[in-house]
Length: 603
Image 1 (cartoon, rainbow, N blue to C red):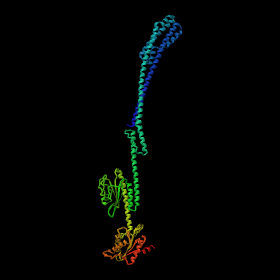
Image 2: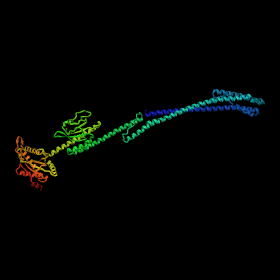
Image 3: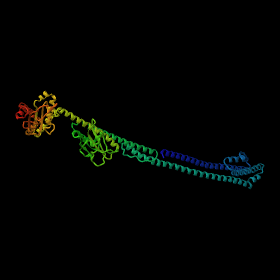
Image 4: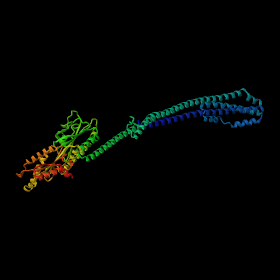
C-alpha cells in the first residue's frame, strides 16, 4: 500500500477519532451541566421552601405578638406580609416553572393549603384581639391545634424538600455516572488517537520512511560520487519509497551502462590511437623487416588476447611464409603453406571456420583444439599479398568480439597497404637500380653495392676482386646488323655474367658495352680462374638475329684484387686501367692489374 494511502487513512482515522473524542467530551460536559443544573435547582427549591416556611412562621409571630402586646404595628406588619403573599396557584406555578414534578407540587400544595388555613386562624385571633378579647386570641394562636398545624406545615414542607432531595440526588448521580462514562470514553479515544499517532510515527515514519530513506540516501550519495558499486536496497513494497528505490536502481543501471560505454569509448579511442601510431610507423618502414617489427609490437596491443601470426607471400615460390607471431598461437603452427591452403586467400575475404556459422576449416590449421580462428587476407589491387591469422580468446562476449573484429579488419587493411607500398617501393627501386635491357644492376646500383663491399672488405680485412668487361668491336654489330642485334649481344653477355657467380648483386652493366663483376671474398687466383670461365663462356656464345648468326663474340677483361693492388676503394679504377691495357694489347684477353696501375690512379 502506498504511503499516501496509508497517510490518508491514518489522517482520516485521526480526524474521526478526534471528532468522536470531541463529541464524547461535549457529551460529558452536557452531563456535568445537567448535574450542575440539578444542584442549582435543588438550591432554588430550598430557597423557595425556606422563604415559604419563614413567611408562615413570621406571620404567626406577628399575630402572636399583637395578641400579647396589643401593639398595632404588629398588625400593620402582618397585613403588609399578607398583602405580599401570592395565591397558592401562583406560588405552585412558580415552583412548577422551576422544575418541580407533580408529586412534589402536590406535597407543596398541601403545605400551602395548610398555611392558608393557619392564616385564617391568625386573622380570627387578630380580630378577637382588636375587639378586646385577648384571651380568645391567645387561645387561638397558642393552642395545641395551632401548634399542630404549624408542625404539619413544617412536616409537609420537609416532605417536599425530601422529595426534592431524592430527585436531585438521583439526577446528580445519573449525571455524574454519565459524565464519568463519557469522560472514560473520551480518554479511550484520546488514547487511541495517541496510539495511532505513535504507530504512524513508528511504523510509517521510521520503518517505512526513515529507515529506507537513510539506506537510499547512502546509496544515492555514493552514486552521486560515481561509485556504481553501491547496490540499492531491495524494497518490494509498492509505495513511494519503493518507487524511489526503483528509480535509484534504474539510475544505477544507467550509470553502469554509461560507465561501460565510456570505458568502451576510451578503449576504442586507445585502440584507434594505437592504430594511428602503427599506421604512422608503417608509413616510415623502409623494409619488410621494419614492417614485421611494427606489426609484432602493435598487434597484441590493438587486439589484446588475440594470439596470431603474420604471413607474407613469397612471389617466387608462391607460398605464404610466416614473418612473425605473438602471444603463442596454438594452431596454424606451419611456418609456410600454399595460398590454396587458406580459404580466406581463396575467397579474398575474412574466414571464420567456427562461431555462430559453421564453416570449412583451413588446411593450415594443424592443431586439434576447438579454437575459434580468424583468417584475414592482406590484399593489394585485388591480389593477396599476405595473411593475418588470429585465435579468439575464451570468455569474450559477442559484442566484444564483434568490436575487436572491426579493428582487426582495419589492422589488416593498414598492414596490407603498407606491405603493398613496400613491395611497390622495392619494385621501383629495382627498376631504378636495374638495367632494363640485360636485367643486371645498373651503375647507380653498382655505386651503392661497391661502397658496401669495400667497407666490408676493409673492416673485415677480407680479399675482394673486381673484373671489368668490355665487348670487343661492339659497334660492328650495330653497324652491320642494327641496334636490335647489338641489344641481343648485350643480353647474351649479361646472362653469362649473371650466372657467373652464385652471389646476387655482383654483376653490373656500367653503360654501353661495359660490364663489371664484383667478387667479394675472392683472392687474385680465384678471381683469375673465374675470369677465364667467363671469357670462355663469352667466346662460346652464338647469337642468332632474324635467323642469321651474328658471328663470334669476344670481350676484353681487366682484373684487380684487394689487397694485392692497393686499397679496396681504388679497385674499379685499377681494373679499368687493366682493361685499357687489354684492349690496347689486341683485345679478347684478360689483363691483371699491376701495382703501378694502382699507384698511378692513387697519384
